[in-house]
Image (cartoon, rainbow, N blue to C red; front, side):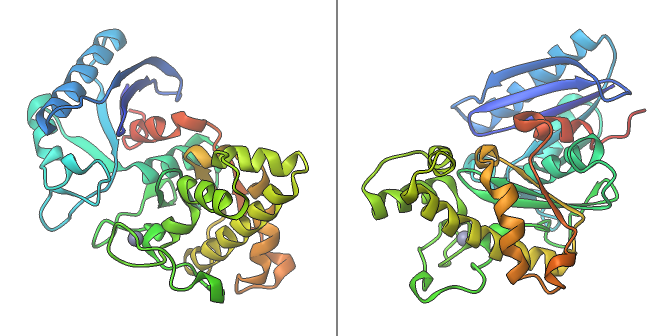
Length: 301
Ligand SMILES: [Zn+2]
């Protein structure tokens, strides 16, 4: 059986999947507020408890923010910054006494949805995290694409394509550059921009709900948001030509983009507009997609 762990900024979730992909046990603990060592200990304890419940020794896959540098073997690019520079793989393998597979959390989302989720049967899948941050991962024939820098799919820190005059130069990003896709498409940005334009305070998903309910200001905001998402995804489509794009993260609960964005990306994708077959899909497993994908990093046997 396979254990998957999703290491998040606020919680660590773990589950056991059996050979058929059925869930056999699930546990969730708060991410320790203390040191890196506390986080490692919490993961080790969670694996032990899940194995007790499963009754057998399991494979272990971990989804985490950021990436493991192929050069140093250390975590980098994690928004949970206490992980950066740490030998997480080596520490877990030593403590657990086995090989452990680790992957970026967006890659885990894409693996899960490509394996038995919304994009099952699709050869090329792009998984997108739209939330506090914006990330992405590429899965080809069920396997995550890691790459030379272990950053394949990290579209959130590319610039917004086809910027309009009022979108230049864009906001400063924590990565040091300006106008990154993340600064346009994150939940906080959607909320802030709606507030600046209307004076109203709604969360990102509430703006989307208001638009569907006929609120003209919210509808205008969502049209701008969907157009930016279409522009940003059109570049991904031009490069990897995915069969499916699956959204994850908190903003994947917005229903409007699934219909509107594929209409809008016809203007930007390098293909006959009416013959684009790439599908934009909600995640079948919702918030659990990441933890399932971590388990799927190992084969069923
Ligand atoms: Zn950036």
